[in-house]
Length: 291
Image (cartoon, rainbow, N blue to C red):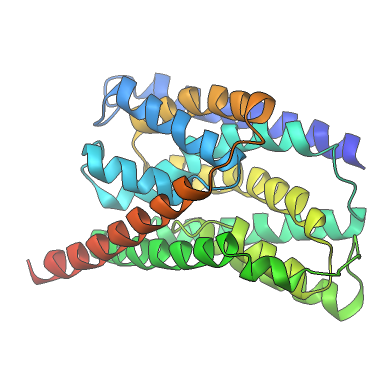
C-alpha cells in the first residue's frame, strides 16, 4: 500500500505542477504582487520548518505580513494551499515508506481530509476580505496554542503508552469525521498537523502513526484545494510559485541534514510571533469592517 500511495503522491505532484504552471503561463502578464526572491526565501524557510515539525502555514502568513508581499488578504488561503502543495508532497514522498500504518486507516483518513479541503476551498473562495482576515487571525491563534501544547509535550502525553497502528469501528469513523473537518480548516489557514496528531493520540494510536497520516493528508488535500483556488483566481501567482520553488529545496535540506536540529527555542519564538500576527489580523478585520 505504501508503494501505491507513493505513486499517487508522485501523480499528484505532477498534476499540481501542471495546474500551477499552466495558470502562470496563461496569465503571465498578471502574476500579481510580490518579489520573487523574498517569496522564494519565505517558501524555503517555511517548508524547512514544516519538515522539522514547526509547520508552514502560520509561519508563511507571518512572513508575508511582515514583508508586505501580499496586498489582498482574500488571496492568502489560496497562496498557502497552492504555494505549499508541491513542497508538502515532497515531504510525503520522502517519509511515506518509513513508517507503516494500517492501510485502511491511512487511506480513509487521507480521503476524508481531501473531501474536507474540497468543501472548504469552495467556501473560502467566496469569503470577503474582512471574513478572511478574521478567519486567518483566529487560525493563527489556534495554531499558536496547538504548537505550544505540542512543544510543552501536552499533546504527546495523549499518546503515551499507545501502540495501535490503525483504527477500527467507531474510532475509525471518528477519525474520518475529524480529518474531514481538519481538511476543511486547512483551507482557511489552520494547519492540520497538530489537531490531527492530537486526534490520533486520543483515539489510541501510537505517536509514530501520526506522521504519515498528517503528511499524506496534507499532501493529498492541498492539490485538491488548489483546483478551486486556481479556478477562482483566489491566489497570487507570483507569490505561490516562488514559495513552491523555494520550498522544495527547503524540504530536501531539512529532511536530509537537519532532522536532529534542536529547534526548541526557535519554536517558542515562532509561537509568540504567530500569536502576535493572529491578533494583528483580527484587529485588521475589524478596521476593514468599519471602513
